[in-house]
Amino acid sequence: MSHKDEVVIDCKNLWKVFGRRADEAMKAITEKGLGKLEVRDQYDCVVGVQDASFTVGRGEIFCIMGLSGSGKSTLIRHVNRLIEPTSGQLFIEGMDVNALSAKDLREVRAEKIGMVFQNMALMPHRTVLDNVSFSQEVRGHDRKERHENAMRAIDAVDLNGWDQKYPDELSGGMQQRVGLARAIAADPSILLMDEPFSALDPLIRRQLQDKFMSLAAEMKKTTLFITHDLDEAIRIGDRIGIMKDGVLVQVGTPEEIVTNPIDDYVADFVAGISKLELISAGKIMEPVEAYEQRLGSVENLDEWPEAHPEHSLDDLVNLSISTQHPIVVRIEGKPIGVVTKNALLRGIQGDTELTQ
Ligand code: ADP
Ligand code: MG
Figure (cartoon, rainbow, N blue to C red):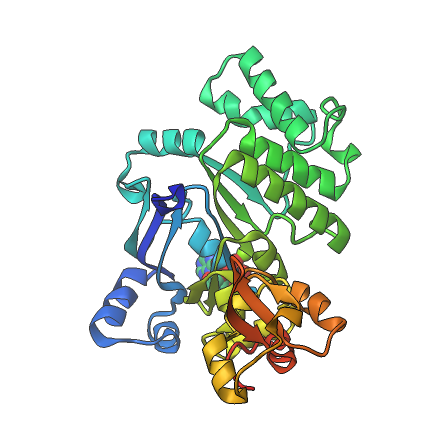
């Protein structure tokens, strides 16, 4: 069993209905199958999240992606109970967060959870160091320990030398780094990130994504990461959940989402995504036997370029450019499949069906 099999965040059939008559509306939804529009018209309520279920494993980065207004922030705020569900449950390491006493909830928030949001709202009259130490002040660590932890976190986000500066002396990207340092300073096991890089310029965003990914790999934090950008979700996420109008419409690995979008909404997102790094030879190859049956026996296999099933389409393109032959896919020297140029071109379009 890998560590990722240990469930850290477990969201079960979670509903959030906003409005004064939310409970009545929820009852009507359950008993009479009322839809969103009826809920709005008859109860003056908004369904923010609709029956969402997902789990995040230990050390996993789970991205939630969707258009603005699709319910991403509402969903993530349930994890540290900034919002209480109208129906359904949310567990952290087996604890039902909505059953915690106020004291236990404070403890769980302080010890287990770090948060990063889009505009980090750093405290303007505190230095970077004091901003980063702050989350631990609430926890009552002693000053020396707080500062050591904070300096370590500042170093981790590449801001050494900036600890005595004030937030308005920093660029937007640096302020988000401070936010990230603040979130990790107290070494929480869970990170909640709500569009942390969305407001940044593309180049800075990419740098911060890289920084975050290397940190995440090192620290093995269980992360729920919200974004409206599928490219970002694919770069960062081990798995992705796609939200639409409050519904988690598809959950899967980046490859699963890109090669098998469940509906037109997901397909529209996926259409603009490069498949070159996401799809592997194993997914588009034709089994050797099938290829031989189709074309008669194949004699000159040894002259063909060879790849491993894990090789990406990008690798296959490089192999394919200098030859007229198909590519033979081998495991430990044994040919198991063939990738023709047609299959490769189809793969680049995201089509993994075996059409020759
Ligand atoms: P996202 O983060 O994906 O942009 P949100 O979770 O902020 O989406 O919002 C989802 C839906 O819930 C939207 O229709 C929004 O207007 C509604 N909503 C969010 N918060 C509240 C609230 N406190 N009261 C009423 N409606 C809300
Ligand atoms: Mg949001």
